[in-house]
Image (cartoon, rainbow, N blue to C red; front, side, top):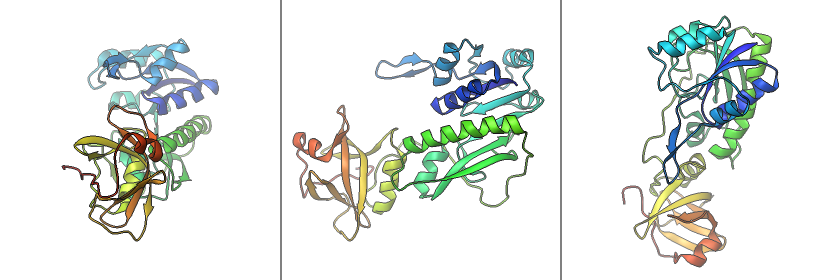
Length: 309
């Protein structure tokens, strides 16, 4: 099948690779412009761009699609039967959605209508959802509101992070996309009940407020792994928390360090406590608690600061 593919990050590159492996003719790839990244803020290509270039695929990087007549003309000239949109990051306007005979298929990392929007994986973890999944929708002009073509659920493990869920959902999404293109499933409207929105992660959401229950903070730690990392402060310096588990039945002032040894740094929360087992100083590496404590004086009686100090 002749396909135009629109996507940007690694999540999308997994689907592009699956389409190529299935023998589809990807006649044009759309991805976002190169973005500054790393310490030098050097513009870097997206994962989709790197894959497209390695396979010799036609590639465009428009900054926006609305009123972009050049991109519309290029997609029209490509004569796609379908368009696949996966974590593209740009709004796809109505003229493009209507262009392919099979329409635009979107791979979304949630069980729609739950978690429509930009950050469904993080929001599912923060909310403590027991399951998540992937939905293939026939795109319309709304925000993840189109009819469902395929949907499959997976459990969220107690140890899952955004990183581990991302990889499982990317693989599942690529498989469902290939199935949807091959079987032409009948669209069904999304349920009217259960709609939630996965807003973009705002600046400051990764800051830990030790006054909150340990269960909420533990989910926060997993939701912001690998990016940007749940963050607190110690002695005025930033400190990232990468792994932690709940310690029930402990009570002290929120943020107080109740114990610190090779088994972890136990920090009191609003309810219960967290045993932090992997930490990172600003400019340092992620370290197990024992290795971290060998280079940082953090003992019982110290205090980690809540968000805002």
